[in-house]
Amino acid sequence: MEDYIVSARKYRPSTFDTVVGQKALTTTLKNAIANQKLAHAYLFCGPRGVGKTTCARIFAKTINCLHPTAEGEACNECESCRAFLEQRSYNIHELDAASNNSVEDIRLLIDQVRIPPQIGKYKVYIIDEVHMLSQAAFNAFLKTLEEPPHHAIFILATTEKHKILPTILSRCQIYDFSRISVNDTVEYLEEVASKEHIEAEPEALNVIAQKADGGMRDALSIFDQVVSFTNGHITYQSVIENLNVLDYEYYFQLTDAILQNKVQDCLLILNDILAKGFDGSHFITGLSSHFRDLLVSRDAATLPLLEAGASIRQRYQTQAQQCTPRFLYQAMKLSNDCDLNYRASKNKRLLVELTLIQLAQLTEEGADTPAGGQRPTPTLKPITPQQPAAAPGPQPQQPATAPRPQSQQPAAGASRPSQQPSAHPTLPPSSTAAGTAPAAAQNLSAPAAADKKIPVMKAGNLGISIRHPQPAAHAKKNAAPAPPPAESAYEDYAVYEKDLVYYWREFAARLPKEETANSARMMNISPTLPAGQTTFEVVVDNEMAQRSLQQLAPQILASLQEKLHNRHLQMTVRVSEANEHIRAYSQVERFQLMSQKNPHLMKLKEAFGLELG
Image (cartoon, rainbow, N blue to C red; front, side, top):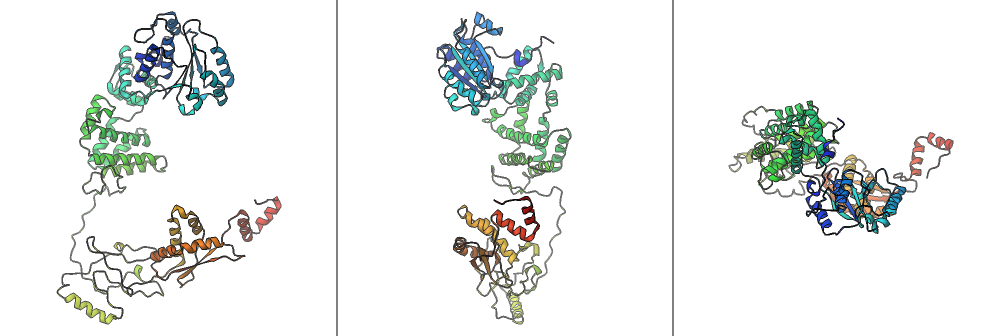
């Protein structure tokens, strides 16, 4: 047990050629060494576990090698290389800036820089996590970093380049390390498994690589963990069990149920997943990735974007052919919206279930879905079979003078003549009820109108507003628009102050950004309307506000007359009197109004000696 070394240290690369996934950077460094064009300061930045410190050590060993190879690698045989491998080299100094971030630590480093190397050509100073240096330490390091001795080379490594001062960045050659791809990680893990005589399935190593998220050190750490769990026989099932990863099988079964519109099966699969301890956020994120993988599997040109094993890749291609691009676009959108709303939702399971119901209804026949790539309509259809409706029978003909529903009766005090549908001629106002009936009977018996029947309507289909009963137009879609009603047929509805205030605020909320001042002013004002009148009054606190509202009055009246269905509505604006408080703006005014309602507040203010600013 004492001889055991973790794989991340045991298989750390010792040459540039063994560094995984950073071919461009290692080639640049090798050429710089071969051509003797070395900078005095380098900055290696990138995610964790991608080889920044490893490349810095290889670089430091190679430039001090006494007999480098023709390929630009260290020989690992000279005294300098052996000292490096045995960790006794005095030419390479590593400093952890996370724990040595003060000015005194940097001054000590600067003092060491002045001493030339005893063996080799260069002294290399590797400062890891350099972004953790304090502001004063950075400033103390600037001059030495800009003009170091000819034998000193600095290599700074960091995972957060944005935290480093621009003055430091301008003095360094910057190398951006990228995340290691899944394929490269799998190939390296296969080599490690072969050297360790461990049996490993490719799908299992693929899951480990995806779990590592581009970091080789994380991948090797997970590999050691799984080896301990499986005792040297790594299988796909053991990996997903040990790492608590959701099996691909669930997503394939769920997609099949969605394509077959089986809502009940979708909910049962979700229940099985949650019962095994998986989080809903983890599930919905994996489902979004599954739809994405199906999309890239449809075309041979995008198939390399699929990061999966060979057997799983074939299964993705098979299921992708059953999905249309429109379905995949909409499914990805719904899943992504669910993922975004998951954190803010109070009933998280219901949110996921509603998303699955919407997904299962995307491929139904006659589904009202938009064009591919657009946002799907967030509607839900019944998931239980409905009873067939009874066959429609002949509808009894309604009399021409059928009484209006109660919700359409005119308000008290307002005269509302009966309104005819736009398809029939409007009767003159002078016609009486007695004269109307024979005329209606005459029209029904005419040959031209023999086939026409008065439509039977339900109150729920009339589009009646709860706030204001308005007759809804029931013209056909292809019919020509009805002419505007004649002056005698127009009726003015009764206006109430509560409705007036509601549409007043609605108009204020719809004002553009240029009218922000008027919008805020209108929100703080409530117009007053005496009962039975059509002229309402608006009281403001200064003349400037009065002029602004008077300039806006035509637009306000046009909107209110349309919303309230009254052409005689008028508005007056006046400035409040000296003793008339419209609204308490300052803290003093608010306190005065509150103290008038509750005199004990004034006594409390005096008892504690409070002052209002």
